[in-house]
Image (cartoon, rainbow, N blue to C red; front, side, top):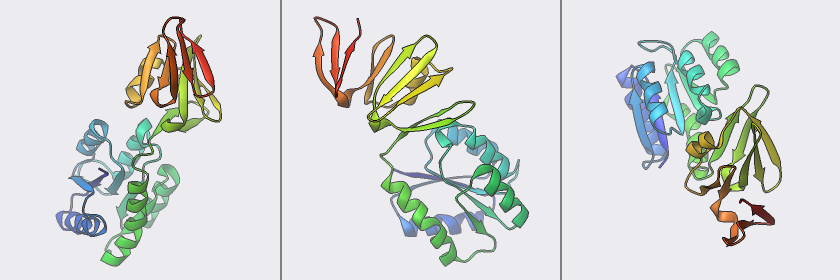
Length: 219
């Protein structure tokens, strides 16, 4: 089930936004919080699909919270929508945090629906299309997990083999990747993680694993 986290300390506005979300999709799970610090804790402990952040909050600003969320690998591309009445802060958030949209106070229900509907619908559509997100100094890799065939560790490098390409990753470990990947992946050797969906044959006598168009010797 998709989850939306609303961080808004004005109860009336919060209830209005929740009501609109329910009208768009009554099955979506709505969480809410009044404080940025507590919202960050929630975001770290669970997987949120959409954030709706007021810029002016009780402890620190929604913009700062947006920066903190973007620094978490799993939220690099997660939709963030700001509630604001200040144009200058809108521009700063848009440039630095890559927010998807703004809800400007005071707002009309129909306008908020126009902003939220395509984001929520797209979120639900892609709910099962998970990605592995890896930040490097020079690049951020966003790799659909269903396209990963296997992952190999070699001399302080991680190589991720997908159906169409190969990615070389520095400063990462297989242990860390296993924590970020879901149940489709198993570690068959200290140097290999494989996607179970691509296994076609297991030769335990010769320590050979057959994947789609690939043969791995993992002895």
